[in-house]
Image (cartoon, rainbow, N blue to C red):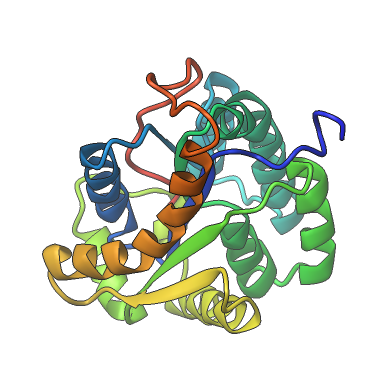
Length: 240
């Protein structure tokens, strides 16, 4: 078995949802919980996670008046993802870490596919190229009404280009996420997120705990990692 075909030792968890759904807060709380249980975590985000990918992120979220074509948006996201997977995600998984990523491939399908109107099967093929077929083991989809999420986001001190999109756009994003959850029920778990952050965090823990069995079974066979991988990035806020 070649290096590229060898199954990763770690656990890859992504957090998804519309603007204001609370996923960034839950990523932080989940990371704290996992570390309290003795796990090594790498917490990262998309677009971003490496110096180059963070520059792409700045371009994507810039509130400049120049219109951004949907294809341009998709290509930038995918380019940043390739760099991110190569420099952060694959090395961390190879070292046995739990990778928590605030947004990943499902956001591309929801935003650029369902909401922007690009061909979803084509985006899926391009994403496989960008990730070398690296896929999350578990995706937590935080769901709440669009109006609630947007009210949270637009009350923030800083807003970005996507925050200015129409209500209809964001409704398409939410519908896209929910459709993806129906298509991939074993991987994507929908978590209602209108409740308090503590209540939502307990729901997250109940869902994540069974997935940790994969880590525990690996630990019986190999030494548990003792330090965070060198490429780890401790970032908290993803593309909104």
